[in-house]
Amino acid sequence: MRTVENILITKTAKDLCLKANLKLREDILSALKAAREKERSLKSRHMLDAIIENAAIAKKKKLPICQDTGMVVAYLKVGQEVKVRGDIKKAVEKGIGQAYKEGYLRKSIVSGPLVRKNTGTNLPAIIYTDLAPGSRIDIRIAIKGFGCENASKTRMFKPMDTARAIEDFVVASVKEAGSRPCPPVYVGVGIGGTLDKAVSLSKQAIFRKVNGRSKVQHIASLEKGILKRINNLKIGVMGMGGKVTALGVSILTYPTHIAGLPVAVNISCHATRDARKVI
Image (cartoon, rainbow, N blue to C red; front, side):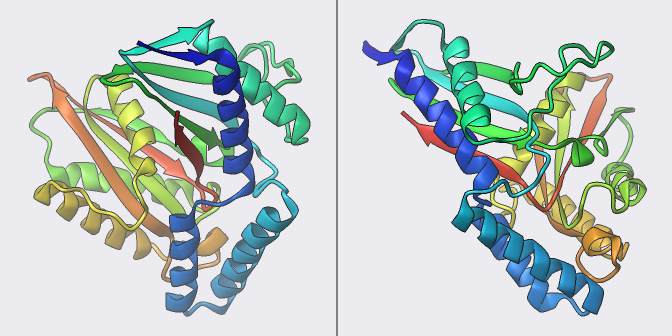
């Protein structure tokens, strides 16, 4: 049985929070550069230049990629052969609090959805913990700004509804969102399970590299078709029009009940931010 001290978990959570907020994911940056080469709209190309330059400045000067430094969602996979000395969730939140204080990151969390009083710490975070085989702890920190979070959608489809109906729903969700989620976006889709499982899948879908595809053939086909239709909307970068509205579409699925077909759409902005470390 391996013992992990809380201090290591706190430091890891802090480092990942800072990394996610200050350094754009390499796959997202590469996709933005590829979009710049493909785009023909002068306005959208200008906006892509600004987005790419912004990411470079953020990395060099250790400044936030976006002023909305989001709500933190932490995903922990704890090995069954690991003994954590202390409360692991408290250790993660301590690290998050340190990152937001020492990094001078905007604190956006309110104490209650109706009270609306800022906590001043960007806490509490949302923390999901799963057990896994082995003696390691996998920690992933995701930063979710609410310009794009507010554009996300869920729908309980009927079990006889077709893949085309789901495709229509995803495309319509992006169309309705328009420029609000700061495109080019990365669209995560969760299909199956229960309502909450579908939402969880849609959020975790964007952890896959943006230029990847599902290993399941009919799901990969669905991803490709949705991406093509979204880009045919010509919303473009920051709503300026053009070829690139989405950088990618990623779908995760899960078995579901015979009477249901839950679907969730998680729209992530051009500053899709997360960082991961295994300790």
